[in-house]
Length: 424
Ligand code: F3S
Image 1 (cartoon, protein in one colour):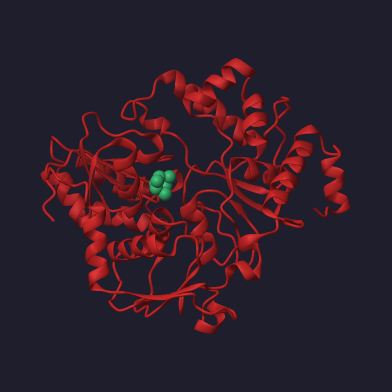
Image 2 (cartoon, protein in one colour; image 1 turned 120 degrees about the horizontal axis):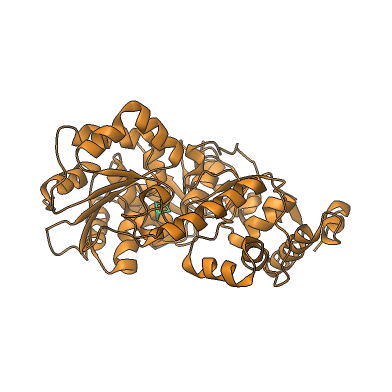
């Protein structure tokens, strides 16, 4: 790999042992990918915390958070002191919400460790956003900006909707990028990697959040890791729809970028989206595909009695919390059911000020932050059947927790929470 003088100096220890380890890691990683050089990034989203039982035990046994950071963030068995970050860096979601530890089945001791870990991240200079949707709360990269992000739903949003550039990075590469401002130059950082590869034409109107989730799931299953160019888009989708669409497509497949012709920034025209490429294949999405996808995602749903309704995957926007509050105002969550809504902390603060938290809590629901049921493996005790308005969560929760899942609209989910039954 070609390194600049600056990069060689970092690799050779000019900026301390952690930076040298990070450069070594990035060079090994880049060479494995076939990258010829590193590029400069000043926008990183990753995770440096130690909130899983495994990492916590490791920290206790091996000498604290420095040991965790060395081993799991820098791939170094030699323990090096954690340095401050150089790039603007944001923390992604974590294993639980420390303010709802009892519901999430977490001990006070674990919360205390979580808070120490969070303080350590803050000392490094990492922004404590604690969300899978950093683009909602202060990290909105600009078009063409080179980023190093983890979290598949955030990566596809970053590339497609914002027109910024990132591959799906991991814990180690994002940590190395935080302290070096470097990441391998390959994949979605390069014009070639962003060109359309397969075509999708919409034969039906795709308009609601539910519609976009179903379409994304169908599309991801088919295109896998290729870049789709989508035509036939009618009503322009907003943030919740695009967020749901990308998350669904990156769950059933490995979609990291899509072009919506006439909507997304690198697809003002079909020609721009294809950028000289030709479609390897084109498929149509219509009523039959939609119905089959809905049937498939609801395959595990057998019992109609709903124990738990989870909303907020990816983390809810303030618009979605507003909608949920309007839908539940004056009603009560059924005594045999539970409603948890996940959102970033900063958005919960707005929900508090607007009175939405009060409305939802008066109804018997809760707003949680930092995590979700798939990440935390936490659901209300005795949960066997869940209702969800997220294709991503409907994809993962039955597999992770062995529960039955019903997928539908937010309205259907709120109804299920209040009646204790799935009646869609
Ligand atoms: Fe976010 Fe959890 Fe969904 S981290 S994207 S809410 S699986």
